[in-house]
Image 1 (cartoon, rainbow, N blue to C red):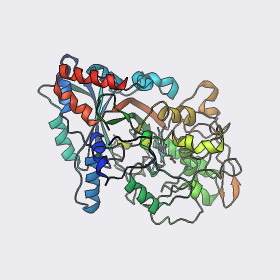
Image 2 (cartoon, helix red, strand yellow):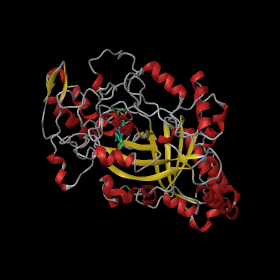
Image 3 (spheres, rainbow, N blue to C red):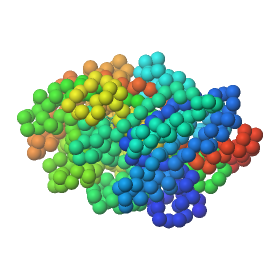
Image 4 (cartoon, rainbow, N blue to C red):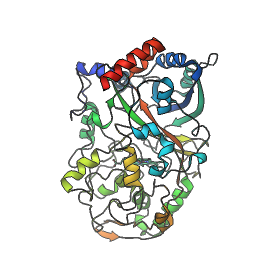
Length: 490
Ligand code: HEM
């Protein structure tokens, strides 16, 4: 059966006709792999023997979406079942060129992240960490619940005697959790809450836990999947993938947070961080604070709000500049007629699959506030880099006039802007009507410049598994199947 990406129906795993589609798709796109440890290997292919590179790639034990979802169901029934290793392969545009195979068409993808510096307001490539500024052809992600098992697997997979690839960068990611076992980022805030949902069982769980009166997170597959240009076979999809290593200066973040706190009344100091992020550390959205909620049930982090009642400065609970509002304004977008705003904003959503990293052995000690060496490996899948990740970063996060004039950029994330909008000139309005109906407004020159620094990144594509397997058949045969594929795509 040909899968219709545009269909609003989300994927029901029990339908047998969806099995081939899920077998062809790589894991981690429709659902986070959820493993505690992940090794990200940035690879450069050896150009003198491309058939051998292709053979090596084709032999990798790539995890399919079907396998992942089956494992996750088993894990649900039996906690001892840990699902084992997840293996994922992503190719950069230069990687496609090296392999000489039909490549995804996106201009942003073809340019690579380094050349999109102006759009993203990124630091220059010469300031990136070594390895990330090298020519990267592929990213191999290996994730497992057991770090020692993962290390053994890496040695098996990367051939030392007859090398076909060089590892230009090795990057570990480790899940970080709060005292309730919920995933957090290094500033201590619960992360990974609000996501598009593609799977029927996840949606049902969401409806049971959170309820839907305003914000419906269901998403069509077209938000994250595109036709894979590498094969003529039916139901083979891929996804564009953004990787960014974002280093966090926790000390500075906490100092700035404390400064805002100093300006708030005694019983509201805790709100300081929520005015920056849009959620409290435990994940409670500032938009829903003071409403009836069972906050004891930490697994049920609320997400049912849409800012539709917070559209002007006298009604905002969540400041316009807050990270979650800038990066997903939900139903509010003054640039569009109200009836169109929500659908438009929803079409920009990204599927976040990031994981924190710790290179200084902080070991989850949140009382220690490092100035760097910890951060987030931001990773996101989408159907269009230009219309989703870059749109969010350029048109929303970094635009001081979005959603309304004088909002400022995203204090958690916004990067250095052009001289007319230097951080120092941005007095965010730390305003909320949260204090039992009393408007609170603190205008102050507190800025979060340099609390996050980009250390490197790249754009990739996650090809379908049949495409990867087709590289096995040898260079000459492969060319034939590629020609067939390009005819189909014309
Ligand atoms: C070190 C960097 C980052 C940190 C510490 C961070 C932290 C957070 C936190 C704490 C949340 C709230 C919990 C949740 O809903 O998941 C969140 C949500 C979100 N973040 Fe980030 N984030 C970072 C980078 C980014 C980047 C680079 C983007 C995209 C340009 C982004 C886009 C989003 C989106 C779309 C949401 C969900 C908003 C919603 O739907 O309500 N984040 N982030």
